[in-house]
Length: 325
Ligand SMILES: NC(=O)c1ccc[n+]([C@@H]2O[C@H](COP(=O)([O-])OP(=O)(O)OC[C@H]3O[C@@H](n4cnc5c(N)ncnc54)[C@H](OP(=O)(O)O)[C@@H]3O)[C@@H](O)[C@H]2O)c1
Image (cartoon, rainbow, N blue to C red; front, top):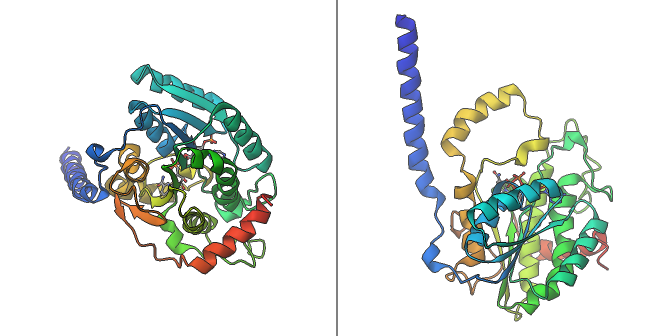
């Protein structure tokens, strides 16, 4: 009995300390200032990966503001259920659910054609969809590319280029690239972008980090190429957010035991995680900025070498990988 009540007190104390730490830490997350929002009523916002996590949260936020949202993702059934949830809260929302598999260049081309046939402009393009798959799983896209690099970078590279005329038609318009601070851990080698020379069982390279670094390089080069068009480009890290991103990671119970208390303190809810996406997509304050990086609704300086040279080199390689040219 004494042991049980002691355990109860210790448990309650640990939870309270954890909760206090979470409260303190969450002040750092940053909140998007809604008073600084550009009006998006009637504007077209395309969100990739709109049926889950951050994309779903962004869809709710854009629908709430009266934007017409194109919701792109692979699983249309799940997307349809999100459409119903949004309509319940915001009955006059205009939502178009469309199938897009960023892991297939053919699907990206079909999707872009469908968007072009239904819309004459895109005011905000949010490249949000993403996968996290460990190298040991050896997952590949339809073209045989390393899965993280293929979906997170090559698919979005092609998509953005195919939709660029629609985004330019809406200028002043924005392209928002959801990257990650894990890009700091990237070890991207132009000689082995698909990590075929690595041993999948023992490699220390994280293919997800590489793909997120590629997102930063892409945003940098895109912003240069769009100079003078009034289409501005933003790349961001949303922080560590509680979503389904780790679905392919097959975490062990030991990893869960470590992650649960750490996540309790440091992990953001999707509502907290979406703030920097909203900051980049809507804030008037950053309207004139382009080619910059953000985290916690403020500027962010990635540690990885996001150089002009690497950005241009990746762009050239991506043109042929995506069969754009
Ligand atoms: N969660 C975090 O801690 C965190 C941290 C830093 C950055 N991020 C970034 O945030 C973005 C959103 O991720 P999330 O955390 O919200 O994860 P999530 O809940 O797993 O959402 C990922 C979305 O991407 C879509 N998707 C996956 N593969 C796709 C494909 N081949 N084609 C089209 N859509 C695809 C998924 O829908 P379908 O499966 O239906 O296609 C889903 O809607 C990602 O770019 C991720 O890298 C997340």
